[in-house]
Length: 453
Image (tube, rainbow, N blue to C red; front, side):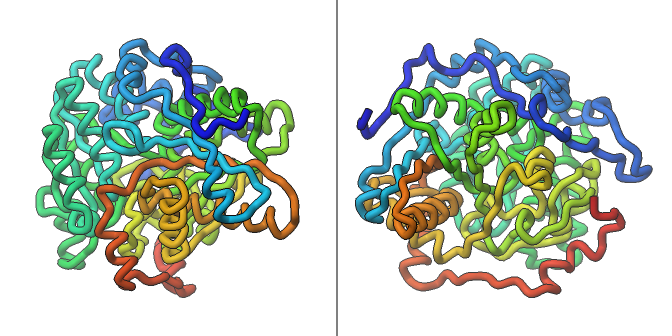
C-alpha cells in the first residue's frame, strides 16, 4: 500500500486505553510521603483527583475502558490521520520509510485533548465545579480549557511566565474557552510569592507552575487539580495515538523499526510508543522506541534516577524518576512543553531497564529540522515536535549511510501556528544552543536528600 494518507473510521477509535504497567517486567516503585519517606497509597491523591483517575493511576489492568461519553468527544477529531512522509524521504534521499501520526488536527492543535477530555469528564461525574492546572507552552492549558468548557467546569491556569510572554495567542485561546490564565510565578499563592522573593524576575518553570496549581487545589475542597503529563493515568489516556497507529500501519502493510517522539514529562512519547512497546515486552519484537528531549533540559540523558518532587516547592509526593532536581530552572527555549525537570515514573523505569532509548538535541538542530519538514510536508510543526523530527532525520541519514531500509514512525504531536514568534526568532538568528556546565546540571541534584535508586 503506497497511499500518502492512511485513515480510519470513527468506529475504529479504540474502545480501551492500554496500560503498559501490566506488561512491565519491573513495576514502577511507589511514591513516597514527602515527610516520612514512607510509601503512600491512593488515598493521598484524593484531595486533588477524582476517584476514577486515582484508580487508573494505580491500576495493574492491561486494558481500561474508554467511557462512551469520552469517545463521543474524541470523534470531533479522532481518529487522527497517519501520513507517509514521502516528500521528506525524497528530500533526504534516504532508503528509510518515514510515517507520522498527526495530532495537530485536534481543536487545541495538539495531542493534549486525548487526556484533557477524560480528566474533565471524570471530574464532571464527581460534581467538581473548578479545576486548577499548569501549562508550559500552552498546549495543555488550551486542551484542558477546551475540555472544561465542553463539560461546564471553571478552569484556572498557571502558565510559565516565559511562555506566557512568548506565546500570547495560546493565552487568548484559553481565554476564549473561558479559562483564567496567570503568568507563573504569581503573587496569588504562597509558592509563587516564595519564588518571587528569591528571584523577582524568575522566568518560571513547569515545576513552579505545578506548585501554584497544586497549592490552590489543596487549600480549597471545592477545587480539583489536573496534570497534563508525567502521571500514569495521563500516559494511559494518550495511548489512543499508538493504538490507532497500529491499525494504520497494518493497513499500510508496514511495521516500524523505530518509534520516535519528543519528551517533556512523557505523555507524548508514551502515547505513540507504548502500544508498540507492548509487542517488545510480550512478543520480543525488535522495535526501538526513542524519547527525544532538549539538550537544555536533559533529565533522561544526564539526570539521575532517584526520588524527587514533581513540583519546585515540594508539595507533591516523592516520585521515582529521572530528574535534574526540582529546583532546576531550564533555559528559556521556545519548546516550553519540554522544559520540565523530571520524567514520568513509568518512562523512567522503562529507561532504567533499557527497554527504551533517550537522546538530547540542541535547539538550532530542532528548528532546522522543523523548517525542512515544513518545506517537504507542508505542515509547520510545534517547537516541541521538531525534537522528534530532528531524530527522525538522524535515523534517515544513518539508513542512507548504511544503505539499509528501515521504517520510522514518529508522533507529530502538534502544529506550530501559535508559535510563529519562535520561528521568527530562528530566522532572525536570535536563538542559540545551550551547553550546560557540570555545575548547572548538578546544582538541582545536590540539594536532594534522597539516594539514587
